[in-house]
Length: 346
Ligand code: GDP
Image (cartoon, rainbow, N blue to C red):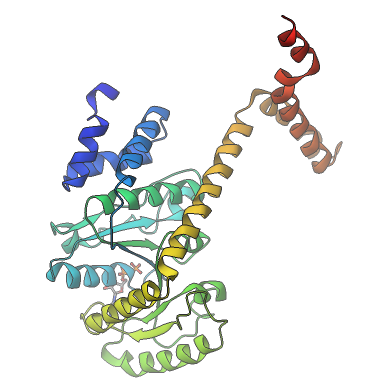
């Protein structure tokens, strides 16, 4: 299989020269569950990271289904590509992991932007956990940046934990809102409002303009009451109509103001450093979990003890202790006194 794939060198050159086919193949490697694909993907990324891409901006976008995320991303994408800039759009859709269906993937989205040579759109990877899906997207960001897409938009849907994952891999977090309703009514958790750097009241058109302006005033007051952000940035609230393209230049202006603010205050670099540390821990956590659950002793003991736990014969905590003991014992066996004695005997 590996022989039919390009070499690491060919991948790296292809990606750096923005070859979309090679870029797509590299992302497929990142998304693959196969160990050899994963290893190859890692080699490619290490090579690319030796010369990191400068001046990129990663934007996270969330909001309830139907609020207008894909319409807005298309409007922003057109705004940027009209100015000759290149934009990549990635997605994290937790529903593809949970239900097998997906909220973001089911419809044909961003049709015009998909056909634009200056844009690159990749749907959400699938996976058996949000962590897995998020990690693939985090690595894909590095690939598209290396291919020269200097604005990367990561979209997610406001239904769960995925906002935190997107927040931890982007420089700016944008929350889309509808005119009129308060955030509780829109089903948006306070924690998500607190993460936002930019709140965007969309669908400010037709008879909703007045409602949209009221919503802007409401959110401006609400954000004043939030604790100050580590970036020192006070969240901004803007109004737009993604469908009619109204307010898009002003929205982008605000994105640039934010970008300058965090660059000038040193937060941009520091935040990316912190995020890299976070993803190191995440990767370790998931590797440890995989190692643990795939261990034969753990598998065996868990199967046995789970029945006892379900039947109430043993407490879940005692069972967990015993399963951990099975793991540590079998891993430590090679260091057991007997073994040491043998290896130390000349
Ligand atoms: P998403 O689920 O958040 O990605 O939402 P979509 O972008 O698919 O939009 C959902 C619906 O809202 C579609 O029918 C859009 O045409 C419509 N829509 C999106 N933005 C606007 C807007 O600014 N004004 C109006 N009137 N409709 C919009």
